[in-house]
Image (cartoon, rainbow, N blue to C red; front, side, top):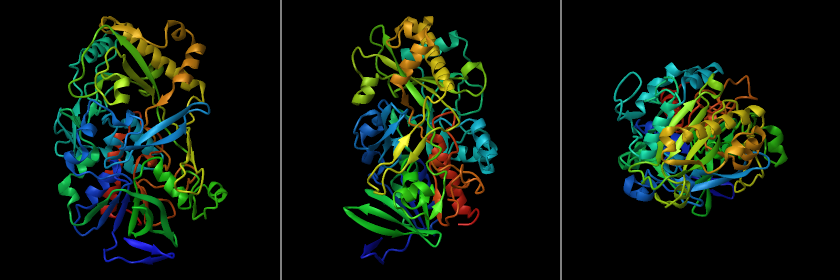
Length: 530
């Protein structure tokens, strides 16, 4: 580490790292693990939060797969960003601030993007992202405990995958209700079969949430002599000299320091990574000049194409106590195509723990309703992230752009009504009193239901697209190439879900790991100019 003294670097005795990875989340942990497999490469991993060692370091509360730490306000393992879901609807979006990032505090779903997502990204000028190109990386990242080694699945990767089992009475009834309404079975949501009802692939195994940090960076990997991991170290900006990234300015232990680097990889997440780029003079020129930040590279796409999945929480009252789940809060999951055609863009995900329990950090809440988490999964991003200040301590302004078209409302109305129909079907009606809200009068009127949707809207917290990948000749839509290299800046890459051109038709945790694998492979193989 080099200290900054009166603006002059003071070199330390430590060797300059070949790669500095900023962010130890789903992609950053993968990068640190894969890049340090080469003993002659010095890797430095930074994270603003702590970097625990093994299961004991994380502790039982973060590892309990029946809970979702990110649902708890002010949990110490996360930070929250204020956002506007619509101009009128304010929300707080939690992000993990600990080794493993949001995979340490999220629900543990580990579902691959769809073939159509990969092929759409490939067609947008990213041929390395075609489904046939990425399948090998998907297999190498996992140990599938249900299906084992096959053309689709791996059996020796760091992430252990288990699908939720319908042993809870509510999960069994959801399965039977979906079958009663004619939805097909989808036993493996990580292959590319037709959508339907099935269990949720998860990186939670035997009741333990095995986050990506724990999976890729166990103590024996953290102890590699060519890997250093610094927790409590927050990046403030990237240093760029003569068109090349040469280091990172960080805050640690109350002091600011300069870290030299051969290559910098930003894996801080789809909020923090674009924010760092903007603070470093990389982004829309007019926005940078507005806050007095020197424009080092005009990149209009930074922050301009934010995407996420709008979500509604639909509570239903049970007839009696159904008991608590044995291993995971996740029940079954139904995917379907809105209007009966096109991509499967509606997701109905079952929670076996009351929402009050997830928010309160307890599994059982007597007499509390259970919930379905209902979301629609668009591919075209409609949000934006912008600077609010040149001060790195000031959070960016984040607008999601939800409910901007009639089509947004139509698909959410359909998702709510399908959920109500499931609860009214005989298998679930036997244990359910139906939705607690909205009631029949609201469900039956489009305009009234739209008003209810607007007032109850939330997000799936699947943010993507804030530093999208694509060709260098289309800077309004692309800020990095398919291997995460920032257009026009040497020695700087991005590797997290911010590089996805739009949101996949599934949650992005498995795709975030894939990003880490692809970018690490590109660095190791030295694909293209550095």
